[in-house]
Image (cartoon, rainbow, N blue to C red; front, side):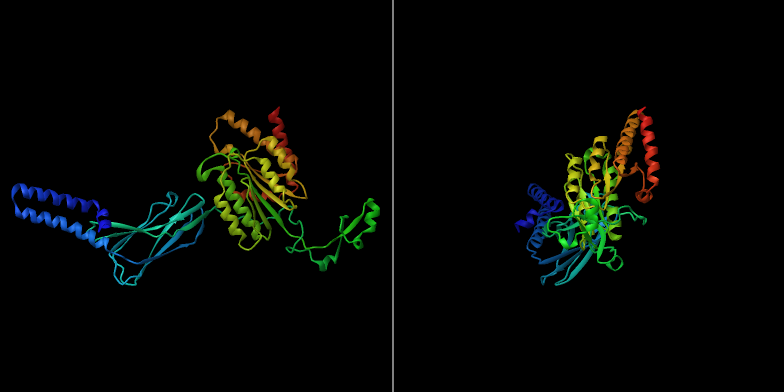
Length: 432
């Protein structure tokens, strides 16, 4: 009964106040009929409080998200199944599922009656324009009487999580540089074609079988050389995401960082579907291996959570990539760079790695005055030139550029020399 009295609504409290006022008026005026009205006004909320307070429903709730992982801007359907486990029918139930602000307003559904051992399902949709992980729930049930005089809340402890991943854009198929590297069991150069022993040789290492010494190469080089065993070669790629806050501009879903995250997701999914053994490295310290089953989902889940790092440094990112440098293809999504930072990235051009950089001119995400714009463009061109001189393939990115249009530039070979020369001439002219 106490819970019921605490749950009186504004309407119920108003009834009690009206009853008190009518009783006082009846006593002053000596009107018995007015006293009967006061008694009636007082009994109604008290009966409602007793009815709701004594209700001991046994309810079970099950929530499912279809799907539980969606890209930015897509909708997910949330299905709530409520079952009455008791022998007594319920009264009116108001269901409210708690949601974070980014998923919209809290849905409210009214169930008039739920019979004994009866179940009912309700559904609603949620949509997020910002990537991340969102908690859905807990479900709050409000029990009320038919007149709305008393209301009590019951909450289920269970919650679910909706993962909003970056937008993945389909990319055209192009032949990328550095397609084969290392050894493994993917995209094999078959032993049947090349024989058991590859003609290639390498320097002798402690522990090598002396029977594999290649004497002709040893005599020619003056160093002990051994034959390499032919192993199937594989396609390897590393996607590098620059998370330095200093390298990106803009806010919200249209910021330059969001463009870089979406591009990283699109490139990673495209390469994995093309058969690459994939690795994702971010400036936040993450190193995700997406080669195993379900690796694509793990990678996208991580990109749903990645954020800008105010203390991030490019040195840390380069060192992290080089810890497992084994050749292959490196595709980096880079924010605004200084010339010194661009030269630092030259350290990734080792172990036969082919480096492709999407260099964002993040200042184009801002409305700068003409003088500041010219200075920003000059600094961007100098950083691009430093990357080109170190052997990188550079793809410039401005605000409004679309990834499917830029992607074929990653496969250009000899055309890159003309672009380098033109860029070098432009930068030199700007310096003069």
